[in-house]
Image (cartoon, rainbow, N blue to C red; front, top):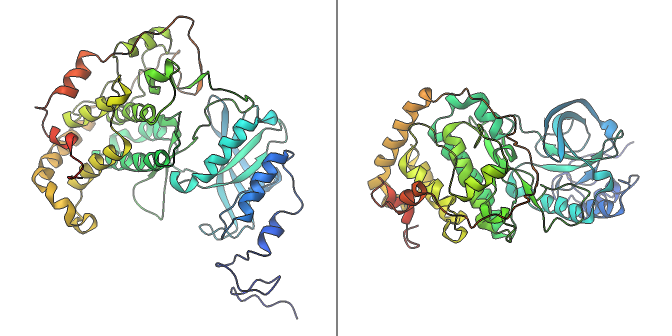
Amino acid sequence: MGTEINNLNCPYCNKVYYEELWCRECDPQRLMQGWTSGNPIIDKCIKDTMYKASLDVYLEWVPFDKFIDIEKIGQGGFSEVYSATWLTVRPLIFYHGGTFKVALKKLNGSRNISDRYITELFLFWNLYKIVGLRFFGLTKDPETNDFMMIMQYAEYGSLKQHLSNNFNNILWKDKVEILLFMILRLGCVHDLGYFHKDLHSGNVLQYNECGIRLPKASISDFGLCGPANEQNIDNKVYGVLPYIAPEVLNKEPFTTSADVYSFGVIMAELSSGKPPFHNKRHDFNLTLAIFDGLRPEFGRGTPEFYKKLAYKCMNANPNERPTTQELFDIINIWRYSMSTNRLYYGREFEKYDNIKEVLKEEFEKANEEIPNISTSFETDPDAVYTSRELTFDNPLPRPVNSSIITSYINNDEIRSSQMLELSDDEV
């Protein structure tokens, strides 16, 4: 008679499962046998996640022949992204085994992957609970020998794609929801002492969770903006020009404020539905204009208090930009103003009831303008929205704010501007 499986005891050692369908004694040992990535450092890092695993929360090495229906769906400056069906027997908590769709991200040049990049790769693993999308493991393209990350598939694509395909259907309630999820996750990363370094709408992925109506926003590619085979990128600038903070272009040390600048650019993009500076060449002249205070345009009908907060994020002085916590507090109140579920927020939000209707009215007016915002636009052939190395032969000046930015930041008469100066004891 065979071993009886009762979902309470391990079928190998008969000890009680530590957690549902997970044996701390047998499962890590079983997973570590019979494979190698060909890179001893990657092997060790994967096995370390197995030693510490609970349930299916670990990375694994997956042979490439376990994937079918592979189709290219995107390309970045240093990577290519494919959708695929994973033929797996892994008892995944959220997928219940069988086959399911994943994203394979090929890291170009990673056949000679640097130790620096491996460190950043496994930092991404440590942050996956924060960013939302699952990181399941690694495989290797047999044709190029480049490593590929196995990721949860984001069925709505990137925020850039989502805006391009659905802008007229994205109400301000939805925009605020996207921003709230973004800043929540970015803030958690900052609290742990890390930076994103390459935040743009192509790295904000939209996915469905538990069948909810609206897609959730997740941030991908933490620190993975450079080439996989370069050991030291400390003195180089990588990214998408319109989203990079001026001080970073000046090769000053990266700070959390630089990520906040990128967030402000995305705020403008959400309002207009158009990539920043889509009609301009992304070259040295645009860089000079940004240093002179040029910022992306906002969509018609965008609330003035929304513009003010975005301009604060894009302040030329990084020390004057809001923190992720301040941004979360403000955007959460915007969300509250459009919510019909008072029980969700609790009594502590009742102190904002005096401005709730004002905010709600402004967002409703903005919704009425969405059909009037043109979704057709031409992109300059030299506008580049994938990450790349940016080098300039000539020195860059000290960045300054334009008169428009200064007027918004200093204008206390903008309706509902009190939302932006909340004191610590009010939040």
